[in-house]
Length: 143
Image (cartoon, rainbow, N blue to C red):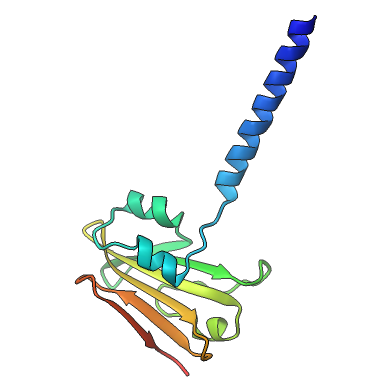
C-alpha cells in the first residue's frame, strides 16, 4: 500500500512539473530590447536560429522580393493594431501602445538586415539597424 501511495505522489509531481514546464515555454515571450538585439542579432542566421533567439515571428511574408519577419510588443494586452510589413507603426510607438517593432529581412534563407523601431527618451521614434555589412546604426526617424 505504501508503494502505491509513493508511486502515485511521484507520478502526480512528475505530471505537474511537466505541464508547468511546457506551459511556461509555450507562453514565454522574449523581451526584445535594443540591448538584446545588440547581443543576439547576427547577419547570416537561418530561420531556425532566428526562432531560437527571438521566438516565433508575429507576421511573415515576402515584400518586394524580400522575406521579412515582424516582431513587436504591445504595452497593453488588449491593444490591437494592423500589423504590416509595408510600414512602421510610428504613431502606435509614439503613443506608447507599442514598445517596439522589429523587422528581420532574409535573403537566400539567411538574415541580412535587422530594423528595430522604438521610442527614445526624447519622445522620438528611433531606428536601430544592423545592415548586411554588420555595421549598426542608431538614428531618430520621426519627431
